[in-house]
Image 1 (cartoon, rainbow, N blue to C red):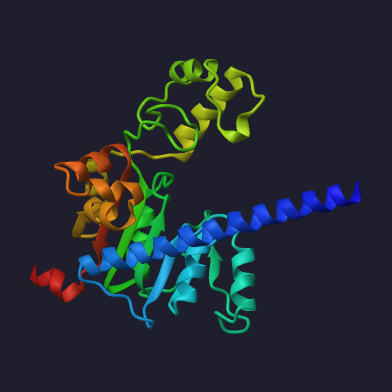
Image 2 (cartoon, rainbow, N blue to C red):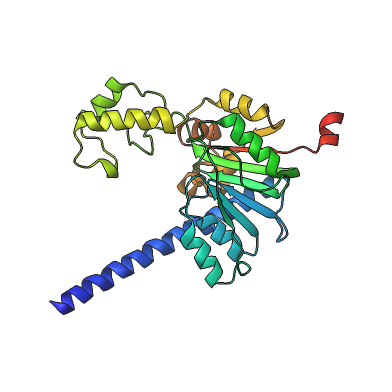
Length: 280
């Protein structure tokens, strides 16, 4: 029995290590995707560049940026980045006592950094959750240096399967009866196993209407343009550098438009220096 137990523990440990290694590899590739897209847009990060991950989650991208020598920081509405903070300390990727992660105060919505701190602000799978676009974009504008840039990836409105509730086209169709139909057919996310179909439908309805935002391309552009005047969708570069298997389709006609509508949106914008904005 002891041997079997030890063997099971070893196997679980190996599986966990493998899973963590895979996450780190994805994060490392994701960082390289950023650098490639920014280069295409005429921006090259240096080791003096200050970088912010807006909605950083556990902070794995920050860890990879730090390993590459960049001054990267993160913020989120939830404090789930303690492990990466500790890992950066142990590997001496940050100064003793330096806190590179900060929690956003939702009662007084503000990115917890000073004005004009960052050269680059990015997010990954965040803006589909942002309920306060004007405030979030205003805060990104505030913490960006003049001439700084920002890049954001998030799921498309018409993605065939919504990534959180697993219901087909739930970015658009979210009525209770529609969600009830799919729940009755057995559609569940991993946290809903054992729930009745009515409970699943109610939970999905609440989640989709209060914690997701799937705007059209035009509406996204207008909201960003209200704050930043230099705005572009860069899905063609996402496909080229970060699309994985999608990269094999990069030369097909209209592929960027299809990816933008049915898979992933990638939007890029810059903070134009005031003197240039006035001249323009």
